Structure formats: structure tokens, C-alpha cells
Length: 161
Image (cartoon, rainbow, N blue to C red; front, side, top):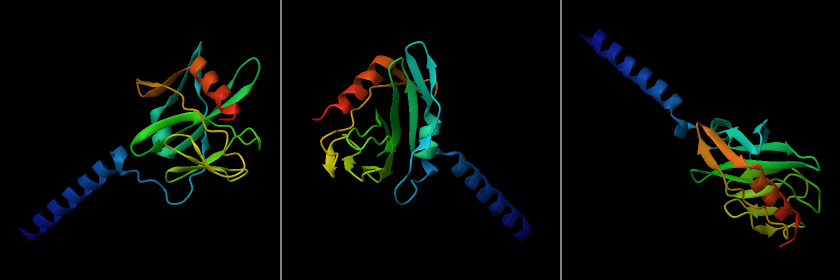
């Protein structure tokens, strides 16, 4: 009887471990600044998409979109249970990299800080260049973005204010 109880308890524990590992909310944010992981977007016509799982698993990703005139960089990150997509450029210092440190975006080149929830500058040399938000939809497990919205956010981030 004792053997069955122990085996049963072990099976229940194993089941809980397996369920916990497959639960996306069981992926706690790493401590300290989270450097962006570069991913490749899928571009189809005027639509750009990235997998939601890439953002959720990495917490902070960056991706490039090429146009005829420019290569634009963007970031997507998890904050307070939501996903944010923003232009990923710091015009004065010419950086295209940001780390996520709790609710703060930190420029990897000049260390200027921005509010991750709004993109608004907090402190530093490039504080006057807030990171514009990009509207998106989630479809079939992907973050789907219209390229005109990406271009608009990128252009807005290039301008002070």
C-alpha cells in the first residue's frame, strides 16, 4: 500500500512538472537587463509577421525590415502580460539595440532610458527621441503588422519630440 501511495505521488508530481513546463506563464522574466534576440520576420506583400512564441520565449526581440530606401529595425517585448512593438532606433547615437530592464528600455549604446510602456524618454543624451509604438494584430499565433504602420512609427522615432 505504501509503495502505491509513493508511486501515485510521484506520478502526480511528474504530471504537475510537465504541465508547468508547457504553461507559457511559467516562463518567468530573467533577472536584470534582457538583451534583444535578433529574429527574422516573415514579409508577405505589405504584411510583416513574427511568431508570438518568439517574443514570449525571449522576452525581448528585435527584427529588421528592408525597404527600397532603408533598413528599419524594430523591437517587440513582453511587459506586464502584454506585448509591445516599437521602432528600435536611437537617432542621435545611431543605436539599433535596446535592452529591457523591468519596465525600462535602455539604449545599448548610450544608456538613455525610456519607459517601456509608453516609449517616452526618461534620462540620457537621446531622451528627446521617444520610441514610437506600432499597432498590430495577433493572428494564427503571429504578431501581424502592416508595413505602412512600421514605416510611420520608424519615421516618428527619427524626429525629436
